[in-house]
Length: 473
Image (cartoon, rainbow, N blue to C red; front, top):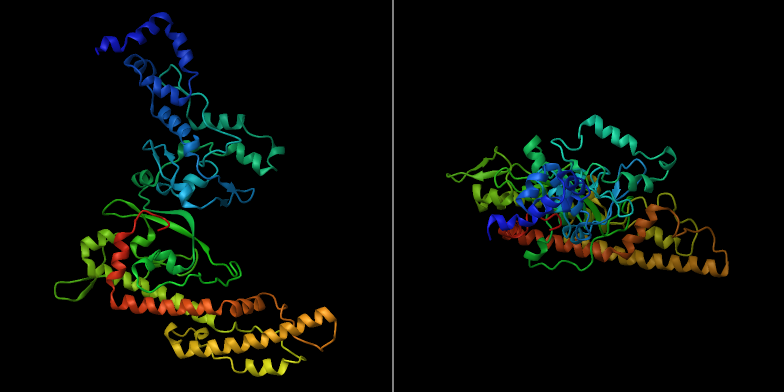
């Protein structure tokens, strides 16, 4: 088809309507319609001549469509210092966010927390949809005034009254996403300011070993216990999972953004500052190990640069530190919680003397004195298991005694209330009910340590076969 026939419909419209009327009609289009019309023919391309801000407006409308909306984000308090969202990554991965610098719709893993969670740059709520109904295109060379003074003037003109500030939901619905045109992906921020490390989503894991070595059990022969280990801390008491903040770093060699675990960093507590587990070394030609002082590469680039043996040694150093912390924590859980009877001792009861004699037989817990984790051997675990069985039998008699007293009202003297004592006794209940779980995980960790000690290449297999850009895996 010739160029004349391509522009025939446009020429007919040009002949039938004055140019001023065409410009007024074009100004009523939405951003998607504006770009579509500009791409329909050469005539409309010359008339409209869309600028970068018009393509940005189109992307901001597309990211708010139902197929790209994504999970809803709600601020925790009025001052918007924290956010709550459904952190199921399968739902997040199915949606896209617009980068106004490179003009692409990208997955959430390409943006840091501030870009998609802050009130100004997050996607607007459906109730108070801020998507552009009309394009900012005007038949002039400059279009809308985007200067700072003009933007502040438009913001003041649309501010809510002070009476609505007391209602956070109205405030969020009104202002959510009002500065989405500032959102940029991590790669664009790196090219502009050189930032190569960003904070990312919060993901739930069962332990620090799962956070830094997820799905490691898939490459091991040792079968992991079916039940997860219990968490005993005031903030996450008797839970099986806790949230960890993910960090994304840019590899200076392959120029890809990967989760921090791909760079052999480690941390043994939730949201504690991370650090390199050990100084990394490479094997020289004479067989000696030489310290690496160059940039930190991801696992794939590190293996290509320094060899498979060097990567195995670096991962082993990281794994040993995490494993010792996890084994020490399980070993402490196997002991009777300290000071559980310091404030609420048995005074007068039928089984009081029996309990006192049993408490004198508590196996010593040397781990509480910052001893190495390998001080707890198999014989100690067997002794703790026997003590747990005896204690549970005596404690069951005391609970039956207390239950009988509550039912009949028969005075049995001053006694120890098994349901008093707050957090200390709650820890005691967890120790009684879940001792077998702590023991099973202690045995599994020992089996993992022995298996990886015999074949350190298992860590290399895990590191190279996983998806390095995945936040969860």
